[in-house]
Length: 327
Ligand SMILES: NC(=O)c1ccc[n+]([C@@H]2O[C@H](COP(=O)([O-])OP(=O)(O)OC[C@H]3O[C@@H](n4cnc5c(N)ncnc54)[C@H](O)[C@@H]3O)[C@@H](O)[C@H]2O)c1
Image (cartoon, rainbow, N blue to C red; front, side, top):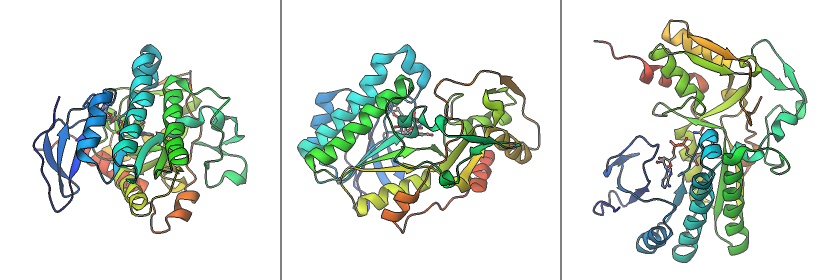
């Protein structure tokens, strides 16, 4: 365990602390957004290392994206899941409180903190997707959706614990913390897996001519997709004008929403071939039927921030990157 030598570039000094369990980069230094970074092989569960790293580095901004992101793994490895997602978050919060309490602390939470509650909304079934029946939800689900008294999966429960801790360090200690409750965060480098990161996984299935399984709801389940660039600009908006204990839903909103059936059709068009698909007549437990993030609170608090990358561009980028190299 250790960090590569310190490297400041353009006055911006980025440290990527990651156990590199599921991420795709294993380089110890490189470029991020035009700035140099150095990587530290740090496990967020290792409290002593986390506290020491914070004391040594005293970062101006903390962006916490480390997670055990799988519902299924959480069910088979509940201690690991809770230790990474909940206790790891506590370690980072405490490191920040002890060494840089004034630095904005950004946490990548998830819409799974709402558990199954969004599925209680009345829906209408359209030809290719479900949608909310009540026009009050035309812009999607806002942060007033309840987070308790609903099934979350163990993954969702450990993220709820982390989300509430992040809010508490804001409220109780007055620290500038934010929970961004993510919809589908994606982009051309997303290494999607079968059960999360559906657009990237779908593009890969088309590229590799693999069978894609649709789990329940006739393939009409809806997700809103946000490009990683727009996630980063939201983080930077918060960094520049932080608040205490903020919570925002962060997805692509209605304009970037798409059902599984619609996504298949769009990507089939881009690849010019049909997808091999199989329908499993049993939805995944804890799967949202229709989830669209209402971005109203974020837009109101940060009027200069907005989605800049459309769903079409996201699909183009995924298809371009997933496409086999031509010679
Ligand atoms: N991608 C999405 O659609 C989505 C949606 C909602 C929320 N989120 C949240 O965004 C964050 C990033 O998700 P992602 O999709 O990029 O997942 P990811 O699996 O690609 O990234 C998670 C990262 O955490 C690292 N990690 C895992 N265990 C660690 C540990 N013990 N110590 C240090 N690092 C560790 C992994 O190596 C990986 O790089 C997560 O908090 C996730 O819950 C993602």
